[in-house]
Image (tube, rainbow, N blue to C red; front, side):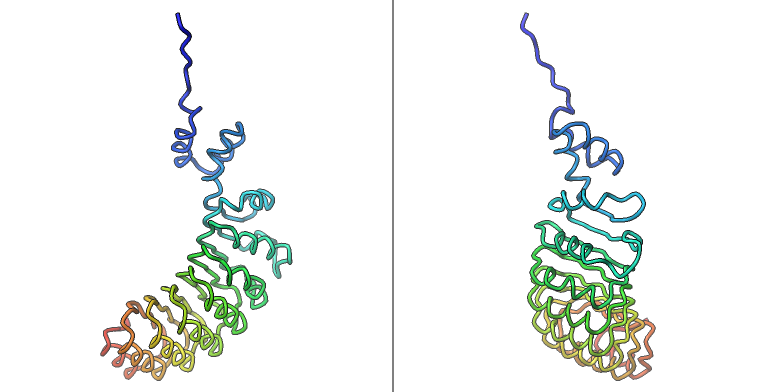
Length: 268
């Protein structure tokens, strides 16, 4: 009688990969330690979405070793035990941004400030995979916004930039507006809870006259008055791509509201 070789389903990479998508992080980590074959099957999914946090997050060494697998990265406030971050931390993040798969980077509530953005500038400028960058609540001001503006002039993949709850003022808004005149990939810009003011809104309105890709502009709670709202409404007579303009919690007055309503952007 011939011996029949029996193969267990979990000996097959295809089966292990299907199982992996149904497991939690702890189970994935355990499976990845079984053998090299299992590591090859379970590690890519384990590092697809990484949350750097303490306690419970992956070690910095493991993140560095598997950075080529990371597609989404979220850095929690307490992971480095305070601010400012060290040079080594920025070096690691820049290294992650230069990998060929990172698409989403969330760094909200880390308070990296203008200097932190400048440290990341070169990596963002040359990055060719990042689609979403969330820098909300990071104490970023005009200098940081200016650095981001320069990066946006050459970056060709970023579609969403979130700068909510920072300290970007008129000059920062003007710098971002300058980038929007030539950038052809950004579709969402979130500047809510900054000090954009009327002059910043006027600068953004000039950008909207030239930009043909931005679809969402969030400016709620940004100290914008009637003049800023009217300037934006004039730009929207020319711009045909913006579909969402959020100016809630600004003092745009009746004149501003009427002007926006006349171009189809009624504010609640």
